[in-house]
Length: 492
Image (cartoon, rainbow, N blue to C red; front, side):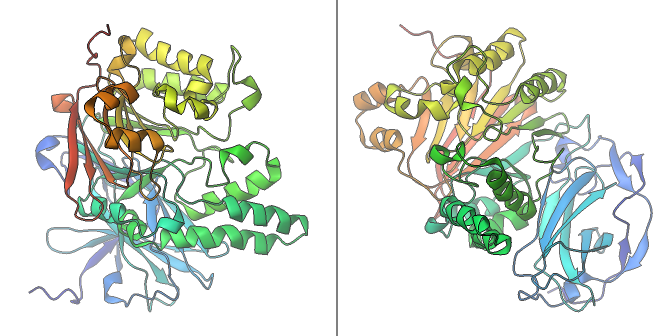
């Protein structure tokens, strides 16, 4: 057996690294799909110590660090130190003979929270990282991430995804099962925590001038989520892209009546807790390309909507700026697949769910029509929606027939909440009842209980494979192969 505690020779690079193009695909998890791709490589080196020789200190580092906003050469790293002292963020990759440290950067946390942009990394490469205390005597648990493939490369990309993880339903076993599959990317589609009661308490406390106690209401919930075994497993196994829904602040029935300052206070707790990049203050909608395989369009479908416009010709579900950006980015994408991350589904749902139509894309009809019409009319190929919110897992066609029936949507999870009434009735019903509730031509799969969701994008086969996993055994509950753009049979 290898002595994992041996002293190793490490090579280190600064957090802002020079780079050059080399004809190689080092540490590619799927070498056959990208062996001839050009990749950006690190070039400057300094010495360093092996962080794995240090003991793990869960008192200083009670939360496992995680990564987000991965590009082909950059990543945003997040960590937390309980005593709010300086820490080192150390990043390394495994080489054939010994691990190679590429970053050892001193960071000063803000109230314990630390973030670091690392640029100049090698594309398409798996990295490891950990937090080390300022005296280099202990460290956090180890986490991993993968940089995106370089432009021109088109490997298979495997994604794990979830939504709706109410802390009362912890532990989230479905997330552990997904981590075991070693995905390239993790997608969080919102409702990661349920802060409804935290917001009520924080509003009252802030009104009395106590900001620190108000912060604590949110931070306890976020800490509980990040220390859940499922989130520890998935966030430490790979890098993530995040979006939010309503419960990161409060339920949608109260969200839009909240004072803007109280909303911003809750949103600040979200951004301090996650490796979520802000393009500008409060704005995170952005796009991330994985070579030429798939581009992820991360939307904000909560903070910009204007309820009073819902039934009008100029409905605002997302801002005009975000809509214009999305169209432009979709049109400019060189990627085979375009995956739109929308926290709330865009599918046209059966009449049974019309009672909640005001909270989803369907309730803002004119803007939904604008986006879907534009995708069809501009012939934007292989668009694929990924969503959450409904407390069920599903694979759907966006509409039952016509040109939009070639657009698919996957409702991921749920990770911790369950029992959507339509999904329950569908599961319990006969074939005839199912056809009346949710016709099989449009609803390929529905599940009311928690599950893991794996989505595999294979550009060489023009194939998206969706698999739902049993949260206890990890066994496959269903596996569905989709070719975006394939129209459903005509109705009637």
